[in-house]
Length: 313
Image (tube, rainbow, N blue to C red; front, side, top):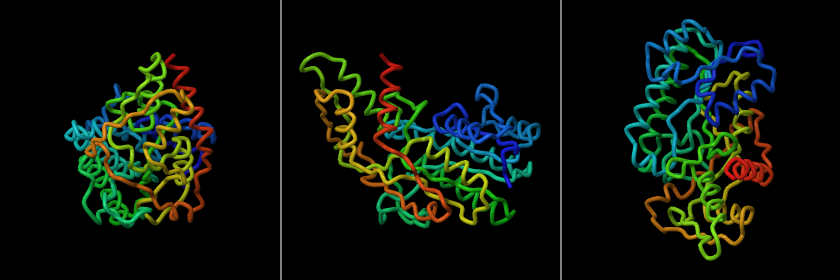
């Protein structure tokens, strides 16, 4: 079993999720964490990944590296999303097996599930319907990774696992308004509007504001990762989420209240930018193993907003 003395490779340790997992493992006392900058190792390069694994011989691997982005990025760059993610996952999973990695965790996303299914979404509902077209390329790449892990577990009796988190936010997030996820985009846009004077304090947001989204602080997911890293799990997919679910409009109103109540919010009402109307995850499987979110949403949202403002004054 994996313990604090095991060699653990975090792929993507500089990203929001990877850096949170790195902090969590350090906090828990892990002594042999392996990381490498993407400039030194292109995870899309199969031979380079093979050589890296042959040299480092990790006991456990966490795949937090991925090509990710918001709805517009997914619409405009579908080839990048499917190509990069397929290469990263395939190279790491195959090299893990070749080097006898004891435990592997792949991170996906709630977007792997069909757009029109019963909510909250159970893990068994994967591939039971049509995907949301706006992020189909990313979702298909992640589904391929899940099926690859499922196949390795079945054929080779490996102990590989896929964790499917809801929308994440927290330290080291991406605040590029064209490529970020909705929560950091709301924080950035509303804060920018708050800096304007008088009647110019207007923020224009995409879509109708009606879709509901479940959110979770990234440190909670890092905690789940460390929790499941040490467990032998028979299932291939486990949803990781929280009780917090609101409409985009309600999140925007809450953030405006915290930053500047004088900001006027306007949605462009383009339904094509709404995406799936609801993606709430069923968390009963994670709960049955003993993991549950302890997030205080208002507190961590305050911390994230304060961090962004202090960084972007």
